[in-house]
Image (cartoon, rainbow, N blue to C red; front, side, top):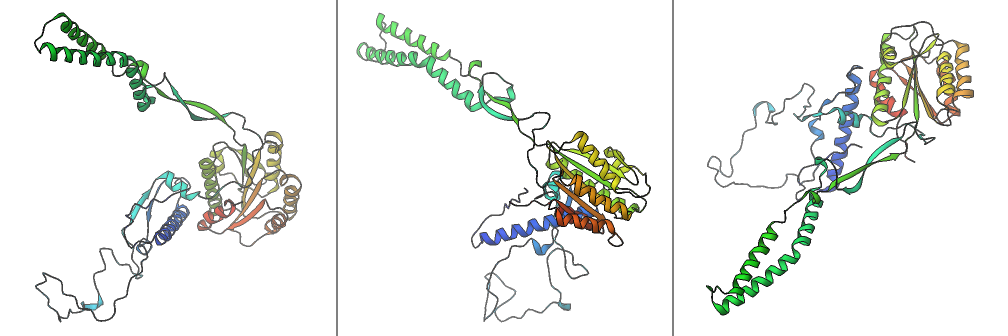
Length: 423
């Protein structure tokens, strides 16, 4: 979740509720700016950062104040030009100083409040509050997944992992242990020497005084010989790899590339799947993506061919559904995988094949998938495939369908299909 940090001072006469309302409105402006930016971008630039401009009216914090009314007389000290009772002429043409911003033709201006969102910040805002619906842990992933966690301290390790505080504590403990006895004896010897010197005089050279002086010197050298820090004292942060359970999921991307899908419709479909692909890469570490292109025949292709191949032909939508069913049976058993599908088409299909698509989905695919989403790309009018799919949507809650009429619809439709549902 994206957080907006308000670093302004919370001075007197500031309302915390007003400030929270301001932050919510500011965040809403950010999301709208990100949505507008994603609609204008090309497919290859979908994941870069963005320069965001916030209108001036939306960055001011609302305040309550007394209106100017009644009789007011203000004379400021040091003003030699005006005295009480002077009248100030109104500016010619009704203008006035409105700040440093430039006015616009529409009568509304924009403040120079412009900032840059990094790629990560842009994607965080773009995919906030989205998720794959009905994701459950059917089985642990094929390859174990580990997470590095702290596991105390160790006496061996890399210099970059030295724990300074723990090392100094160890050093202090060692020095106390090694010098406690000599220090106690030193203090006793110094007291005995001081007593001798009081009785015999500061210049006394008798045998007991010399012996005590020699012992004090020896003890001081012995205490100084203890190093401040030793290799034995060094302690390192210890981290271990802890196995983490993860969920297996696969997303089928089914795109219609038939002749009725002109270049504009194909571009809209690719924009939708690009957004979906970025969302999966951003939010899920382990998910398989299967790309399927179809006209009269469906093919499983790689990412490069899915987005950039130019092959086209007639339309048999059921070919993609049959291929998806075959792949699920061969590689992704529903008992072990969370299966998702997103289909994009203009809906132009044969009448008999439309009914075949509905029967295939109802009997074979819907019982296997966690969620199936269908987007109809810029149709002239809803055709039979849309009406057949509506029957499926009425019967299965895990089936969703939306319509895209232009680039501006892609992001709202995408958010509607994959919005997070609070339980």
